[in-house]
Length: 101
Figure (tube, rainbow, N blue to C red):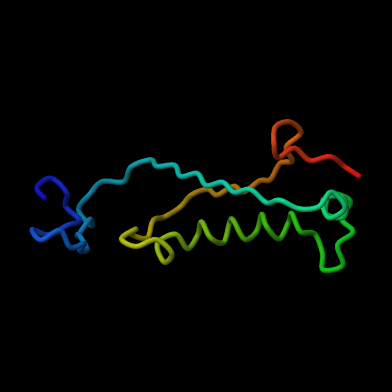
């Protein structure tokens, strides 16, 4: 498996020392889709869910996950992340479009 530094000669994964590598600018993106009943969406958008602001909790969870990338994904070394952003949007067209009740 020449050329792939994270695998040994038998194809098993292994850690690689990257301490000597220069810093590089990197960007990662993730996305998801949540389906729900229109009435549930209305409660979320109107901030009337009894447990609090669902979209703000989701945003904070995304930021917290970004800070812990090195713990959550195998072989990702800890990085000095300088920025993290999490946002949500409601689809208005297509097969997953939302319609307010």
